[in-house]
Image (tube, rainbow, N blue to C red):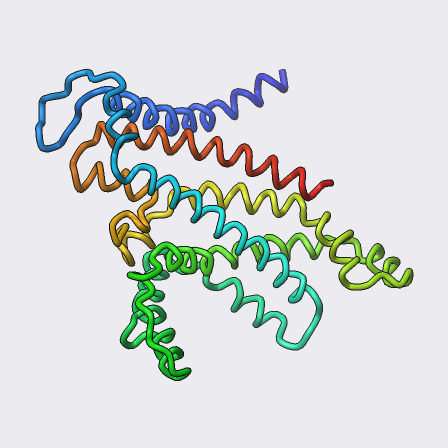
Length: 286
């Protein structure tokens, strides 16, 4: 009786969730099998796998996949490594600890578009940006980051915004760490490195897995930073899968090919997340 009541109460949420997921996915699958170009309305002929073939043979496909994976791996490494180190530092009591925590976490609440504009105009502008001023002060020629190092620029922007999220999760996890184990280790003459390696890092294994999983979901769909700062260029140097799909759908008006690209992106996201989480979990629990 209790199970029936529980299922009955959960049914509306489950049904709404299924509709929310299945309807868009079904429409995407349907559009990926027809010739659906907004410039030629009414020519919705069934083409089978042709849209997938067009997307996979697009000149920007392989650069977009490579840039997507490089962006994902780089941001994950930066946010996890720096997040763990900074969290371990600010977990110790010191004067102004609360203010430092707020300052470290605040970039996460900035919108991606604003984040890109800040880095594009205030930091990386080759004429009046802060990086240009530092280069000139040191006697070097200013660098046009968005033209010379477009993908690296995107990685810096995204890492700056997602590092606070990792810090927030890790600091919360460290607050639940057993202090008696650390005190016992210190009494046994354990160094700070040993405590960090054998107590703190294993304690952060699950939070790191959570950070990797959540960031992977969002990093595979990075778009605003690329759209605002580099526009996917020069060429395809900073184009990822999300921007390539946008280019097919809203610049070339080919919804069918874009839908095929969207299905490929979903498949790639699941494969990457599966292997990445397994690898992180095994390495941290050994």
